Length: 357
Ligand code: UD1
Ligand code: UDP
Image (tube, rainbow, N blue to C red; front, side, top):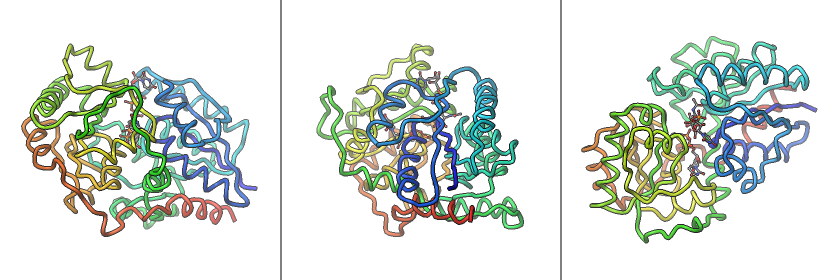
């Protein structure tokens, strides 16, 4: 029996791991040990996803959050190393590009435990983003690189992976698996009276929230859109809540607390437009047929821009307002199966089994 130790810690990782965990449970010869680093810890940033998506309770629950990047990653590294020494798994599985991803991959590689990386090869080419550093380093120390898109495979080829022993496999995107699987569970958020027509917005990336000028521009743009174009519904990430308060900004849109995935899927399905700086939400807009305006200077999901589903506007107030007005109500179609069509999780598990045989 192959024992895989999965390391997750942040909201999008719970959603990604939920579908892969299901595939592991259905497959013979492989079992999963689940480690939660504690990076996200509020009930509606963590527990809610375990409850809704049927993710097994973590076998190992760390309690590491907050502090600077070095402190958080370093504490995770030390504690994950101890866990690996105790459990001695055959392989470690990590997702995406958070501090939990890097700490997990590094702890495993130092113990000579092979690492599989889901969402390998994505690049923004902006080294000021913490996510870019995490994903580049994680790819370098992984031996199974599960790429979601053609572009992510090409990025790795350009970095010389063709000549390395690591295996690069285009499997598709696990977030599409999740969107397809859970779409039927969509449910309106309770306790919030929502307008019939609205824009769904999310905002939390450090490059926006931690730069006072960018944050102020975005807040002004959102306020303007909410007042003049269409109501903006925004489930507010705790990071953004803290930084808006710190900067003394007045975000005058319909703010709601972070919500579960089923509520999020409902909002994606019912909105007129998605306005975001999230990685995952850019794709989910596409899965639910909605145009997306992305408040970032680069995206890793370049194919969405190429097919005209996504417009990049950075943190420019005027561009955010203009692009939102232009894209409001516009529908988009996935004609090319850009993300694999919903079979990524099983492909990943099949490759994990193959790699161990
Ligand atoms: C992290 C990831 C980011 C990802 C995001 C998903 C890194 C470097 N960044 O960013 O790539 O897009 O998760 O949402 O790993 N907080 C709470 N309660 C929580 C979670 C966070 O109050 O449940 C607070 C933290 O205490 C901290 C702030 O939010 O003050 C930021 O949390 P952190 O995990 O450091 O980074 P994220 O912005 O969530
Ligand atoms: N999401 C959610 N509730 C929310 C906001 C986001 O379930 O209140 C989901 C969203 O649908 C997507 C994932 O969380 O599946 C994206 O996470 P986030 O935007 O925090 O991180 P990123 O993708 O930018 O790393």
